[in-house]
Every structure is written in C-alpha cells, then in structure tokens.
Length: 93
Image (tube, rainbow, N blue to C red; front, top):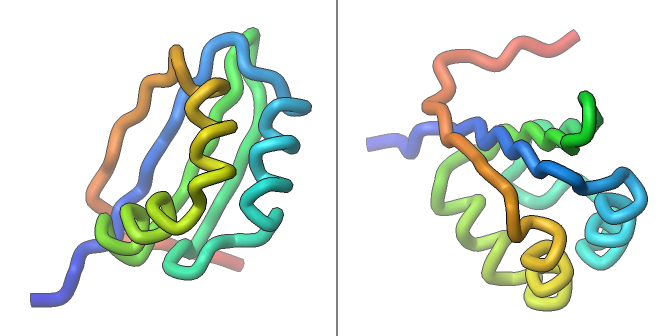
C-alpha cells in the first residue's frame, strides 16, 4: 500500500514572522526532504503554516531529525492548533 500524502495546516496564535524566520533558519531554511510544499503567512494575530508531505512517516522522520529546530518550534508552537488532511491532489503551476 502506498503511503498517503498529508497536508498539515497550523494556526499559531500570537506567533510572528520573525519567530517563524528564526525557527526555519535553525532547520536550514529549505523545503525538507519528504515535503512537497511549505507556505507561511499571517492573518490577524495568527501565523499560519501549510505543508504537504509525501506521508505522515516523512513528516515524523523530519521532525525527529531536527532537535534544535524542534526545541525552538516548541516554544513558538505552545498555543498552536493543527489539522492533518489526507491529500487527494496537489496542483502546481
């Protein structure tokens, strides 16, 4: 059975783009192996991050491989909410 791609959508109340930039710099500021898409932006007082991963296992492996970034992310993400969506299709330009 082929692993299903997932889309993880984070809402991080009170987080700033400066905090986001700090965390992504610690993670190498690149699209991670196993990720197809990574988008971040703000609306109101929240930061939103949308990621599409090849599989849940790819996401879990990346998170486990980034201890320094994960520690910084944990501070920023204390109030975060997220949802995982099974991907039906990804269209790109």
